[in-house]
Image (tube, rainbow, N blue to C red; front, side):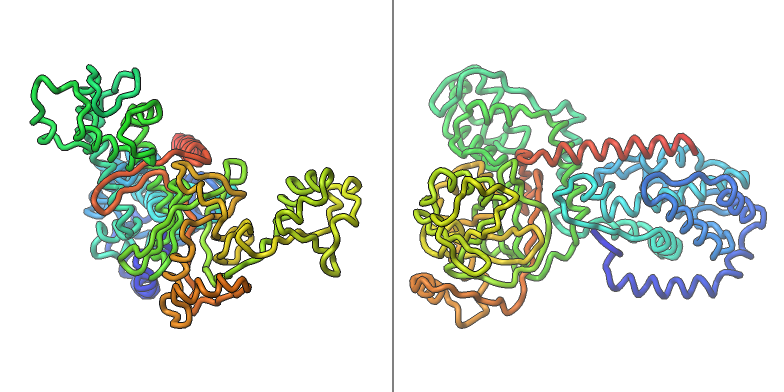
Length: 557
């Protein structure tokens, strides 16, 4: 998400452009035939239909404001036809699929059909169509086609994008329109790698896609099966197996599931978040046979998600991908730490948001969330008040600790539960020995866990919404490396003491909790993950609905 390309440099430039515009108004008008400016004015004031969507009225007002300030001088046409900027804008709209956008959403066909007009009314219509298209295209390319929080209430991200006047003035005065439009897109490498891979997949789809491997019994290394040549071809098509290496197989061994093929299957499994055992079982087979058309859709969805993000995530930051069950710490251009994580269950989904980490707590208490207290612990207390003591959990009233045996739990309702449950620090604490705090309204944090075995699972959605991290001491040492007081040994010594300690970070570190089901690594390998929370489905539906609304609005104009 970009409020302005290359902000703040271009924001300053934009301010200067506005001043230039106000000084140049009379001069602009005199170079254009009066009949064209009159036609543009009439097109806006009398003929113009509204934009669709929540931003429609404001966009129409800004369009009028822009042209009024210019004395209705055109940007895209002259009195003799479409100009160079207009041709470039029209071509860009035709080719916007390269960014996962839809040309029809920006009247690309209608605009292209009018590029040959020469009468004043037709030129005025073309002028306004191009400006309207720029407003919609520029916003969508920069900040996404839909508002995340309206797609899914668990997405707490609010991209804004450039406004209509900024886009119109920027394009009007840009010496290089192509560069200006390019700068509207996300500038992060992750976006451009995904864009490149999307183009490759579309070419592959146009050539027929990849072959489907027939279902059957599980394929294991050492087996011979007539499906093996098909499997080998499928993995070559998607780049998981080198074609030259595969061509060296002796004719009599083409049906043998050899070690080379097993290694290729492992690579495929790695890139798709599957157990890397080199065995082609039902789950791997199902994933292998997902049509390339579906993979293309997934890539387009994740390009939309990248447009929601800021280009600058911070000089040093923590990036959690919920769909990948993975955390990484990035410092400058390098990833300096990675770890498996456990995230929220499907009915306790971890939200998407960003916040700054401020504290690390060693030997923390666990203040049991009220929802867990009333839904999980209250029923247990009603049958056995001793359950809390066995888990080192205290009942806290308004004036301090309360003996759980002194309370008639059977007469306590969920609504009338006026107590707070707190688990003492220690090895059995639900938060483990460390928690990492980035204060937020969701009460989500990163923490250790006594349930280490869950990190060995491929799918790791087991928490109530917080993020459990593997090897938390290593993570703490990485985050505190600039604080000479807190070496890894010092952290371990403090934990061993059993005493609770809160450490304030010298510099707050941005934490980005994200949800990505497709991305491309620096080595060019494309990765896909299952849609564990159904967020791909909701986003795809929202994008379809957005397209339908836009088409309806275009048909009315």
